[in-house]
Length: 342
Image 1 (cartoon, rainbow, N blue to C red):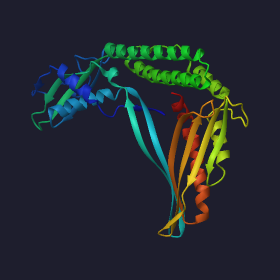
Image 2 (cartoon, rainbow, N blue to C red):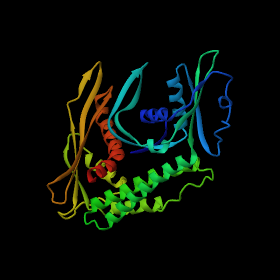
Image 3 (cartoon, rainbow, N blue to C red):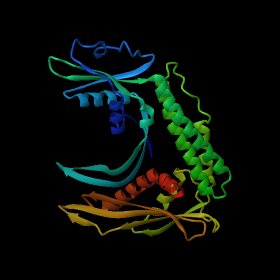
Image 4 (cartoon, rainbow, N blue to C red):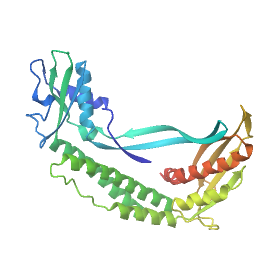
Protein backbone atom coordinates (compact mmCIF):
# COMPACT_ATOMS: atom_id res chain seq x y z
CA UNK A 1 0.00 0.00 0.00
CA UNK A 2 1.07 3.55 -0.69
CA UNK A 3 1.02 6.39 1.75
CA UNK A 4 2.34 9.98 1.39
CA UNK A 5 4.17 11.40 4.37
CA UNK A 6 6.41 14.32 5.18
CA UNK A 7 9.88 13.81 6.64
CA UNK A 8 9.93 13.47 10.40
CA UNK A 9 13.49 12.20 10.72
CA UNK A 10 16.74 12.99 8.95
CA UNK A 11 18.54 9.98 7.58
CA UNK A 12 21.91 9.41 9.21
CA UNK A 13 23.67 9.37 5.84
CA UNK A 14 22.41 12.87 5.10
CA UNK A 15 23.64 14.14 8.46
CA UNK A 16 27.11 12.65 8.02
CA UNK A 17 27.42 13.97 4.47
CA UNK A 18 26.18 17.43 5.35
CA UNK A 19 28.48 17.71 8.35
CA UNK A 20 31.45 16.61 6.26
CA UNK A 21 30.63 19.32 3.71
CA UNK A 22 30.19 21.98 6.38
CA UNK A 23 33.04 24.42 6.91
CA UNK A 24 30.97 26.76 9.10
CA UNK A 25 32.70 28.11 12.17
CA UNK A 26 30.73 28.56 15.37
CA UNK A 27 30.47 32.25 16.21
CA UNK A 28 29.61 33.59 19.65
CA UNK A 29 29.06 37.30 18.94
CA UNK A 30 25.76 39.02 18.29
CA UNK A 31 22.91 36.86 17.02
CA UNK A 32 23.12 36.50 13.23
CA UNK A 33 20.27 37.73 11.08
CA UNK A 34 19.19 34.19 10.09
CA UNK A 35 18.13 33.43 13.66
CA UNK A 36 15.02 35.57 13.17
CA UNK A 37 14.47 35.72 9.41
CA UNK A 38 15.66 34.92 5.90
CA UNK A 39 19.43 34.52 5.63
CA UNK A 40 21.04 37.43 3.77
CA UNK A 41 23.60 35.19 2.09
CA UNK A 42 21.05 32.52 1.19
CA UNK A 43 17.93 34.28 -0.15
CA UNK A 44 14.74 32.27 -0.53
CA UNK A 45 14.57 32.64 -4.31
CA UNK A 46 17.82 30.70 -4.62
CA UNK A 47 18.04 28.52 -1.52
CA UNK A 48 15.90 26.40 0.76
CA UNK A 49 16.94 26.94 4.36
CA UNK A 50 16.05 25.84 7.89
CA UNK A 51 17.45 26.30 11.36
CA UNK A 52 17.85 24.07 14.39
CA UNK A 53 18.93 24.60 17.97
CA UNK A 54 20.08 22.37 20.83
CA UNK A 55 22.37 22.22 23.81
CA UNK A 56 24.99 20.44 21.72
CA UNK A 57 26.44 21.47 18.36
CA UNK A 58 25.86 18.13 16.60
CA UNK A 59 22.23 18.03 17.74
CA UNK A 60 21.65 21.56 16.47
CA UNK A 61 23.02 20.61 13.05
CA UNK A 62 20.92 17.45 12.96
CA UNK A 63 17.77 19.40 13.78
CA UNK A 64 18.51 22.02 11.14
CA UNK A 65 18.95 19.35 8.48
CA UNK A 66 15.84 17.54 9.69
CA UNK A 67 13.79 20.74 9.50
CA UNK A 68 15.11 21.34 5.99
CA UNK A 69 14.06 17.82 5.03
CA UNK A 70 10.50 18.43 6.25
CA UNK A 71 9.97 20.70 3.27
CA UNK A 72 9.92 17.68 1.02
CA UNK A 73 7.13 15.23 0.44
CA UNK A 74 8.21 11.62 0.23
CA UNK A 75 6.74 8.31 -0.84
CA UNK A 76 6.67 5.48 1.63
CA UNK A 77 5.97 1.95 0.51
CA UNK A 78 4.65 -0.09 3.36
CA UNK A 79 4.24 -3.82 3.36
CA UNK A 80 2.18 -4.94 6.31
CA UNK A 81 1.05 -8.13 7.93
CA UNK A 82 -2.08 -7.30 9.88
CA UNK A 83 -3.98 -9.30 12.45
CA UNK A 84 -7.48 -7.97 13.17
CA UNK A 85 -9.04 -8.22 16.61
CA UNK A 86 -12.67 -7.66 17.52
CA UNK A 87 -13.10 -7.43 21.27
CA UNK A 88 -16.15 -6.73 23.39
CA UNK A 89 -16.15 -5.19 26.84
CA UNK A 90 -18.99 -4.77 29.30
CA UNK A 91 -19.15 -1.83 31.70
CA UNK A 92 -22.10 -0.75 33.81
CA UNK A 93 -24.28 -3.26 31.99
CA UNK A 94 -23.44 -1.86 28.53
CA UNK A 95 -21.46 -3.81 25.95
CA UNK A 96 -19.02 -2.02 23.66
CA UNK A 97 -17.21 -3.46 20.66
CA UNK A 98 -13.67 -2.43 19.87
CA UNK A 99 -11.72 -3.25 16.73
CA UNK A 100 -7.96 -3.02 16.59
CA UNK A 101 -5.25 -3.90 14.12
CA UNK A 102 -1.73 -4.96 14.98
CA UNK A 103 0.53 -4.05 12.12
CA UNK A 104 4.13 -5.09 11.55
CA UNK A 105 5.52 -2.99 8.73
CA UNK A 106 8.56 -2.97 6.56
CA UNK A 107 9.03 0.55 5.33
CA UNK A 108 11.15 1.54 2.38
CA UNK A 109 11.87 5.26 2.50
CA UNK A 110 13.31 6.85 -0.63
CA UNK A 111 14.35 10.34 0.34
CA UNK A 112 18.10 10.79 0.25
CA UNK A 113 18.33 11.70 -3.44
CA UNK A 114 16.00 14.64 -2.92
CA UNK A 115 18.24 16.32 -0.34
CA UNK A 116 21.70 15.54 -1.66
CA UNK A 117 23.83 18.65 -1.37
CA UNK A 118 22.23 19.96 1.81
CA UNK A 119 24.84 21.43 4.15
CA UNK A 120 25.32 23.36 7.36
CA UNK A 121 26.39 26.81 6.23
CA UNK A 122 26.54 28.71 9.54
CA UNK A 123 26.56 28.04 13.27
CA UNK A 124 26.17 30.28 16.29
CA UNK A 125 26.25 29.81 20.05
CA UNK A 126 24.30 32.03 22.38
CA UNK A 127 26.79 33.22 25.00
CA UNK A 128 23.98 33.71 27.52
CA UNK A 129 22.35 30.27 27.64
CA UNK A 130 25.07 28.42 25.63
CA UNK A 131 22.48 27.11 23.15
CA UNK A 132 23.85 26.14 19.74
CA UNK A 133 22.07 27.23 16.56
CA UNK A 134 22.70 25.92 13.03
CA UNK A 135 21.60 27.00 9.56
CA UNK A 136 21.07 24.29 6.91
CA UNK A 137 20.81 25.29 3.25
CA UNK A 138 20.15 23.58 -0.05
CA UNK A 139 20.52 25.19 -3.45
CA UNK A 140 17.13 25.14 -5.23
CA UNK A 141 18.68 24.32 -8.62
CA UNK A 142 20.60 21.40 -7.18
CA UNK A 143 17.53 20.09 -5.33
CA UNK A 144 15.45 20.44 -8.49
CA UNK A 145 18.04 18.56 -10.53
CA UNK A 146 18.09 15.77 -7.93
CA UNK A 147 14.34 15.36 -8.19
CA UNK A 148 14.23 15.63 -11.98
CA UNK A 149 16.83 12.87 -12.17
CA UNK A 150 14.68 10.63 -9.99
CA UNK A 151 11.61 11.46 -12.09
CA UNK A 152 13.46 10.49 -15.26
CA UNK A 153 14.33 7.14 -13.68
CA UNK A 154 10.68 6.55 -12.79
CA UNK A 155 9.61 7.44 -16.34
CA UNK A 156 12.14 5.03 -17.82
CA UNK A 157 10.90 2.20 -15.59
CA UNK A 158 7.30 3.08 -16.41
CA UNK A 159 8.01 2.93 -20.14
CA UNK A 160 9.73 -0.43 -19.72
CA UNK A 161 6.77 -1.86 -17.77
CA UNK A 162 4.28 -0.63 -20.37
CA UNK A 163 6.34 -1.98 -23.26
CA UNK A 164 6.66 -5.31 -21.48
CA UNK A 165 2.93 -5.74 -20.84
CA UNK A 166 2.12 -5.28 -24.53
CA UNK A 167 3.93 -8.53 -25.36
CA UNK A 168 2.66 -10.54 -22.40
CA UNK A 169 0.65 -13.66 -23.13
CA UNK A 170 -0.05 -14.25 -19.46
CA UNK A 171 -2.88 -12.04 -18.19
CA UNK A 172 -1.56 -12.07 -14.61
CA UNK A 173 1.88 -10.84 -15.67
CA UNK A 174 0.21 -8.12 -17.75
CA UNK A 175 -1.65 -6.98 -14.63
CA UNK A 176 1.63 -6.95 -12.69
CA UNK A 177 3.28 -4.71 -15.32
CA UNK A 178 0.36 -2.29 -15.40
CA UNK A 179 0.21 -2.14 -11.61
CA UNK A 180 3.94 -1.35 -11.51
CA UNK A 181 3.50 1.42 -14.07
CA UNK A 182 0.69 2.91 -11.96
CA UNK A 183 2.79 2.73 -8.78
CA UNK A 184 5.78 4.35 -10.48
CA UNK A 185 3.70 7.24 -11.77
CA UNK A 186 2.11 7.77 -8.35
CA UNK A 187 5.65 8.09 -6.99
CA UNK A 188 6.43 10.55 -9.76
CA UNK A 189 3.33 12.58 -8.96
CA UNK A 190 4.60 13.01 -5.40
CA UNK A 191 7.96 14.19 -6.70
CA UNK A 192 6.18 16.61 -9.03
CA UNK A 193 4.39 18.18 -6.06
CA UNK A 194 7.72 18.55 -4.30
CA UNK A 195 9.39 19.96 -7.39
CA UNK A 196 6.71 22.65 -7.60
CA UNK A 197 7.66 23.68 -4.07
CA UNK A 198 11.33 23.93 -5.00
CA UNK A 199 10.92 25.43 -8.47
CA UNK A 200 10.69 29.20 -8.11
CA UNK A 201 8.34 29.23 -11.11
CA UNK A 202 6.14 26.55 -9.51
CA UNK A 203 5.92 24.49 -12.70
CA UNK A 204 7.85 21.30 -12.12
CA UNK A 205 7.95 18.79 -15.00
CA UNK A 206 4.79 17.66 -16.80
CA UNK A 207 4.08 13.92 -16.74
CA UNK A 208 4.09 11.90 -19.96
CA UNK A 209 1.23 9.67 -18.82
CA UNK A 210 -2.20 10.38 -17.44
CA UNK A 211 -2.74 8.54 -14.16
CA UNK A 212 -6.46 8.10 -14.79
CA UNK A 213 -5.75 6.45 -18.15
CA UNK A 214 -3.10 4.17 -16.65
CA UNK A 215 -5.55 3.13 -13.94
CA UNK A 216 -8.24 2.38 -16.52
CA UNK A 217 -5.81 0.11 -18.39
CA UNK A 218 -5.17 -1.73 -15.13
CA UNK A 219 -8.90 -2.09 -14.42
CA UNK A 220 -9.49 -3.51 -17.89
CA UNK A 221 -6.71 -6.04 -17.37
CA UNK A 222 -8.21 -7.05 -14.01
CA UNK A 223 -11.62 -7.60 -15.59
CA UNK A 224 -10.05 -9.66 -18.38
CA UNK A 225 -8.27 -12.08 -16.03
CA UNK A 226 -9.90 -15.54 -16.20
CA UNK A 227 -10.58 -16.19 -12.52
CA UNK A 228 -12.86 -18.39 -10.49
CA UNK A 229 -13.16 -18.70 -6.74
CA UNK A 230 -13.29 -21.82 -4.63
CA UNK A 231 -13.46 -22.58 -0.92
CA UNK A 232 -11.33 -25.40 0.49
CA UNK A 233 -12.26 -25.17 4.16
CA UNK A 234 -15.05 -23.20 5.80
CA UNK A 235 -15.57 -23.96 9.46
CA UNK A 236 -18.05 -21.10 9.92
CA UNK A 237 -20.07 -20.93 6.68
CA UNK A 238 -20.57 -18.06 4.25
CA UNK A 239 -16.95 -17.75 3.09
CA UNK A 240 -17.77 -18.33 -0.58
CA UNK A 241 -20.04 -15.28 -0.83
CA UNK A 242 -17.52 -13.14 1.03
CA UNK A 243 -14.70 -14.27 -1.26
CA UNK A 244 -16.69 -13.56 -4.44
CA UNK A 245 -17.70 -10.15 -3.13
CA UNK A 246 -14.12 -9.21 -2.28
CA UNK A 247 -12.86 -10.36 -5.69
CA UNK A 248 -15.54 -8.31 -7.47
CA UNK A 249 -14.74 -5.27 -5.33
CA UNK A 250 -11.06 -5.65 -6.27
CA UNK A 251 -12.01 -5.33 -9.94
CA UNK A 252 -12.02 -8.95 -11.07
CA UNK A 253 -14.81 -10.50 -13.12
CA UNK A 254 -15.42 -13.72 -11.24
CA UNK A 255 -16.80 -16.58 -13.32
CA UNK A 256 -18.67 -19.56 -11.90
CA UNK A 257 -17.22 -21.85 -14.54
CA UNK A 258 -14.14 -21.21 -16.63
CA UNK A 259 -12.00 -23.61 -18.57
CA UNK A 260 -9.00 -25.33 -17.03
CA UNK A 261 -6.62 -22.66 -18.35
CA UNK A 262 -8.00 -20.05 -15.97
CA UNK A 263 -6.70 -19.06 -12.54
CA UNK A 264 -8.23 -20.27 -9.31
CA UNK A 265 -8.51 -18.17 -6.17
CA UNK A 266 -8.90 -20.55 -3.24
CA UNK A 267 -9.75 -19.58 0.34
CA UNK A 268 -9.93 -21.36 3.67
CA UNK A 269 -11.27 -20.35 7.07
CA UNK A 270 -10.14 -22.69 9.82
CA UNK A 271 -11.59 -21.94 13.25
CA UNK A 272 -10.56 -23.22 16.64
CA UNK A 273 -12.97 -24.25 19.33
CA UNK A 274 -14.36 -21.23 21.22
CA UNK A 275 -13.00 -20.73 24.72
CA UNK A 276 -14.39 -18.96 27.77
CA UNK A 277 -12.13 -16.78 29.86
CA UNK A 278 -13.28 -14.43 32.63
CA UNK A 279 -16.88 -14.85 31.48
CA UNK A 280 -15.97 -13.82 27.92
CA UNK A 281 -16.25 -15.99 24.83
CA UNK A 282 -13.25 -16.02 22.47
CA UNK A 283 -12.87 -17.41 18.97
CA UNK A 284 -9.63 -17.68 17.00
CA UNK A 285 -9.34 -18.55 13.33
CA UNK A 286 -6.94 -18.49 10.40
CA UNK A 287 -7.94 -17.06 7.03
CA UNK A 288 -5.92 -18.30 4.06
CA UNK A 289 -5.92 -17.50 0.36
CA UNK A 290 -3.88 -18.96 -2.46
CA UNK A 291 -3.71 -18.32 -6.18
CA UNK A 292 -3.45 -21.46 -8.28
CA UNK A 293 -1.99 -21.27 -11.77
CA UNK A 294 -3.62 -22.05 -15.09
CA UNK A 295 -2.36 -25.63 -14.91
CA UNK A 296 -4.66 -26.15 -11.92
CA UNK A 297 -1.78 -27.37 -9.74
CA UNK A 298 0.92 -24.74 -9.27
CA UNK A 299 0.43 -22.46 -6.28
CA UNK A 300 1.59 -19.02 -7.44
CA UNK A 301 1.14 -17.30 -4.10
CA UNK A 302 -0.12 -17.95 -0.59
CA UNK A 303 -1.07 -15.71 2.32
CA UNK A 304 -2.73 -16.13 5.70
CA UNK A 305 -4.05 -13.94 8.50
CA UNK A 306 -4.64 -14.91 12.16
CA UNK A 307 -7.97 -13.59 13.42
CA UNK A 308 -9.55 -13.27 16.86
CA UNK A 309 -12.90 -12.05 18.13
CA UNK A 310 -14.61 -11.96 21.52
CA UNK A 311 -18.11 -11.38 22.85
CA UNK A 312 -20.17 -11.68 26.00
CA UNK A 313 -22.47 -14.14 24.23
CA UNK A 314 -21.26 -17.18 22.28
CA UNK A 315 -23.87 -16.62 19.54
CA UNK A 316 -22.14 -13.35 18.58
CA UNK A 317 -18.77 -14.92 17.82
CA UNK A 318 -19.40 -16.30 14.33
CA UNK A 319 -21.11 -13.17 12.91
CA UNK A 320 -18.28 -11.03 14.24
CA UNK A 321 -15.66 -13.33 12.78
CA UNK A 322 -17.33 -13.25 9.35
CA UNK A 323 -17.39 -9.47 9.50
CA UNK A 324 -13.65 -9.40 10.15
CA UNK A 325 -13.05 -11.87 7.29
CA UNK A 326 -15.09 -9.69 4.93
CA UNK A 327 -13.22 -6.51 5.91
CA UNK A 328 -9.85 -8.23 5.69
CA UNK A 329 -10.41 -9.65 2.20
CA UNK A 330 -11.81 -6.40 0.83
CA UNK A 331 -8.76 -4.56 2.09
CA UNK A 332 -6.02 -7.07 1.31
CA UNK A 333 -7.10 -9.23 -1.64
CA UNK A 334 -5.99 -7.05 -4.55
CA UNK A 335 -2.60 -6.19 -3.08
CA UNK A 336 -2.03 -9.84 -2.21
CA UNK A 337 -2.75 -11.04 -5.74
CA UNK A 338 -0.53 -8.34 -7.18
CA UNK A 339 2.25 -9.47 -4.87
CA UNK A 340 1.78 -13.02 -6.14
CA UNK A 341 2.16 -11.80 -9.72
CA UNK A 342 5.38 -9.89 -9.06
